[in-house]
Image 1 (cartoon, rainbow, N blue to C red):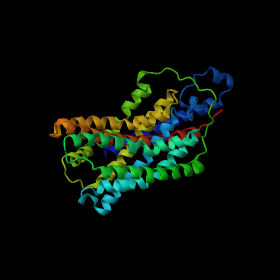
Image 2: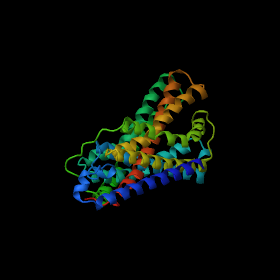
Image 3: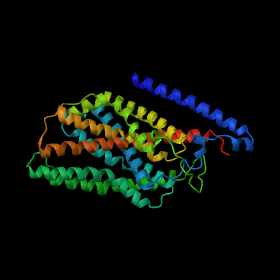
Image 4: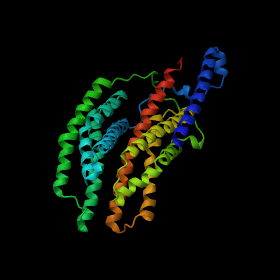
Length: 359
């Protein structure tokens, strides 16, 4: 109920503010050129010629967005399968299902990442496809192999067999890579043409100085506080199922919490982007992604509290095992939140600039 109230409050305030902006801009359009030159023009309309400019390092940005679409699909599919098929009753079945679904949804990654990269004018599409396909597998395998070396040194039962490593490598090369390539080619051909409501100026507009709290770095750090607060309680039960070896079976409630997280993330990111654009700073793509992805920073910080106060782990292997896999969990959730934030913000930016008459 608190989240619903918060979303309604944010939406109402933002809509009233946008109505005032539209009224002010329509009033400015009725002035003649002399009055307009003497007037004090400010706000998000002033950056209409740069707001759809390609983001910095578009290759990595599009790869992260494509990966986020894929991870969102994986989370929803696994939760639905867990609800319908009761995967939590058998040990390891949830992880096996997640690996299979991740490999099967690789075309989603290629489609959305490749189409976005084409729309922003990217030329190195094969390199972008490779980064999209191998970004998450390389992070997961690199972390797992590092932990595995420590496990072998300590003769721990958590060591991953060599056959499993070979199987995962084969899945990445012979399943994930071809499917991502197919999705990239389809995405570039079907949805690779830019359709922005405003044309992009040839020369970038200088970004004016603004208050310290309007800087993208500050907006990024503050953007993840509210989404983390909406899933704070659920994180405790998920961590308990991970590290206290309790069976987690309320996947219907997890689906509800995940949906609430998505809604809150979109609302918070839209508000952050509005403040940024109103300060005439058009670097909204990375800011919208990172302000939502900063939720992962707070989740990882909470994992430190959970490790020292809720677990009895000690030693090099257990510490590395815990923080290594918690970094992967936090990073994946950060990419999901960042992608959702960018999707919602992109619709918002297109909507407000398509409703304003540009001279």
